[in-house]
Each structure stands twice: as structure tokens, then as C-alpha cells.
Length: 566
Picture 1 (tube, one colour):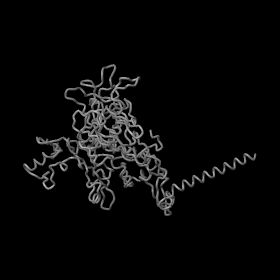
Picture 2 (cartoon, helix red, strand yellow):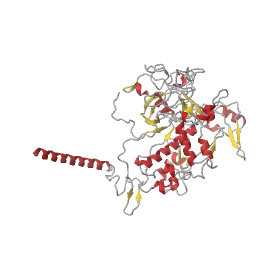
Picture 3 (cartoon, one colour):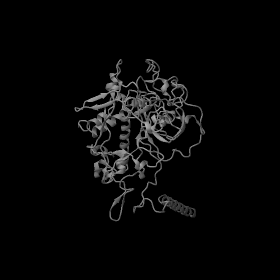
Picture 4 (cartoon, helix red, strand yellow):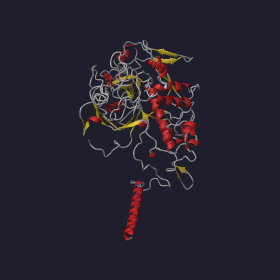
């Protein structure tokens, strides 16, 4: 009996100590180390998510732990053009789509646009048409490919195949749309938005945009209070009411950790690092050996006993050989193939070689300036800021403010959509006396263009101003002197195309050409090397270029801080 009583007493003491310890730990966590004040107090004051552990992996993505690697190291460089000069680079951890964006994923995007911005309305017709992939990319003058032209995008038989016919501009717009839809869903799950409003209450005047919600939440959904302050749907954890009944912290902010970073195209450096999957040849703090492909080994065929001899990617084996002999196909496909048809690399990424080549974010230049930067290398920065109204509030685009651009190929796209915050270039207020950037558009910084050439003289710059021989001499000496086609419309809206027929152009490179990486179903083995790089105009599309999205990681570099070193 005495033993039982003693045991009960010890149990009560243990529970009391544990409770006290928890309270102290909780109290310590919610106490500011700067002021000693309480954080997340019900009376108000500073509110912050002190329980945040780690960024949640967003839909479709896998984690890629960053590190150092040699970018541009190719096994073969038959052209000897030094377009892939090896450079040592460091990449921060990030997330990348497990597969290429598929037709089914892109069709969901088109369906949303069609519902919210009906193409039957003249004001919105160009929004839907501008998002449509170019299905005519399948046509060939001496080939019968109409079955792909008519079916590839929409038929469920191709639903899990990578989308093609999408320009770089369209891929960026898809990533922006995806960011908003994922964050909209996250906020709904957390109780900040009315349930199912994303389907039942959305129209051209009432949409969700992540930046608008962060900067001016009351303007989200066109200011519809029923959605953004739904009765019974408000998250009570952060909401506070003062003695006078005034509410605060009723909208999610970045401090809550609920709003994720945006989906975007990966940079060239990120894509190449992820495609290589060097973790399988890591030994302590070194990479032992080199990799030619996303998989291990120097060959495109598998050496596993079960599938020995099978191709490890979808590519063109030779002239007239896109899939092999019938009945025992070399790679299981003649055009593209369904995603996940081949084994992933060590990061868990599928089709980082073959199937379709992929757009990346970078503006193309043959020069990689690692002397200036070897951390998260990227060329293409154009810095903007939110446009403000005279009263200091952000300017949100309405259905009457949509601006349409006519691309060099004649296609019309929307520059902005209702519900977004209008963007303007940064100015001297942000650049004055800065050493890390000095202008809004940094695409041409140290790129070997005219200002880097031995002919450049700042006091004798004829660009756009000179006449006769002076102007011609200035143009022909430019390194990136690409053709300048012009497009305009007459009073009836008909497109007038003017081709640049000059014979003194020196390059096809300009600020509107983007890098694409990886071999495709249409390419030879040479292009399967992740370090190979090519470029294509950002407003054009093909039947062999697709894309996948990426997302930056916030917080720690590694998911497993106590992982083994080898």
C-alpha cells in the first residue's frame, strides 16, 4: 500500500515538473529577447509565428539541397565555342517540380482563365488567346503530324505528357497564376478566406493576388468583405480585439508563415545543378568523379539486370530513329512520353534529360561572369516596385486598366491582370549611392556587349542618333547586333510586319532570347548533358521545349540538420 501511495506521489511530482517546464519553455519562446515583452499577447502588441518549424513543400515540388558545383563542365564540346566555360558556382537550396508541367496541369490554368475572363467578352478575349499554347508547332512541311496538332494539348491520352508550344512568356505567366492559386488555397485552409470562394465567388472584378493580399488585403477580391472576412472563417489564433472592440491581425502576413514564396522558372544554374544530381558521387566534402548525365555512368542505356539495355531517356538515337524498332522500343516513345516513364535522378526529379527541353529564367549570353558573382548566378534582373496612388495606397489594376502588348511575332498578350498591383521601374530613390545595383534593368550588366568591347567610347556613342557611315559603323561594331524586326497595326487593326533586311547584322542574340536546357525527344544524345545550353526567342514556341517550375527555400539550407557527413 505504501509503495502505491509513494508511486502516486512521484507521478504527481513528475507531471507537475513537466507542466512547469512546458510553461517555462512556452513562456520563454513567447518572450522577446530584445525587450522582454510578451509576443503574441492577447492584449495586442507584436504578433509572430514562434511555432514555425520549416517551409512546407508546395504541390508538385521536391526539395533540392543547395551546394557548390562546377557549372558548364561538358564532356563534349564539338563546336569549341567556349559557350560552356566551366565556372565554380554555389546554389542556395530550393524546390523544383518533380516533373515537367503536363498538358493536364496547363489545361487547369486555361480552364481558370476561361471562367474568370470569358473570351466571349471582347475586353478579355486576348487574355485567353494569349495563354493558349501554339498547337501548330507540330506541323512540318514534309510530315503528317495533324493528329498532334488536333489532339496533343487536350486529349486525355496525352494528359500526363509535357506541355509544348508554350513560349517563355507564357511559362512565366503560368508560374505567376500557380503561385496565386496555391496561396489562395493555403489561406482558405488556415481560415482567413471564405471556404470555396476560389470557385464560387471569383470573376474578373473579384480575384486573388498574393502581392495584393500582402500589401492591401482589403482590396483582394475587389474588396469583397464577405470573402476576406468571412463570418466564422477568421483565424482566431492571431486575431486580437482591444478594449474598444477594434480588431487587429485579422489578415495573414508573411510573419504567419502561411504565405509561401512564389513559383517561378528555375535559373540556369539551379536547373543544371538539379539535373546533375551530384549527391550520388559525393564522398565526404568532395565529388569523386564526374557525371555526364543525370544518372550515373557514361552511357544512355541501363546496366541493371532487369532492364539491361533499355534507354534511360527519351531522345533521338539517329537519323530516322525516334523510338526504335517496333515490338522492342529503345526508349518507349517517338515524340514526347508520359512524365515519370523513366527513373528519376538522385534528387527525385524526372526527365531532366530527354522528353522535352526546358525553359529557364536566364537571358542568354555566351559569357558567364563568375568573376563578379559566384552565388546564385542569374542574368535577367529587372527590378520594379509597386505603383502608388496620390494618397500613398498601392494601385491595383482593374478590368478597365488592362494593358496589352503586341509581341514581335504579332501575338497579343496581357501585361497585367485585374487584381494585381501595377508595377513601375525603380528609380533613383532606390539606386542612389548603392554599390550592389544601380538601375532598374540589369540584363546587360558586364555581358560583353558594346560597353565591354574595345571599340566603345562613351563620348562617341552613335546608338540611335547617328546618321550615314557613323551610325552604320556603330552598329556593325556591336557584339550583339541582332535583327530588329518591327510590327505595328493600321487603323483597322491589321498587323503590319516589317522585316529587318540589313546585311550587316552580327548576331541573333538580344535581350529577348532566353536559355533552354536539356535534350528533347527531337535531339541527339549530345544535348542530354545538363551543362549544354541553347537559346530561343522568349515569345516563340516549339514542339520540343516545355518547362517546369521552381520555388526558393526560406530558412535552413538543409532539411536534416543532424544528417551524417558521408
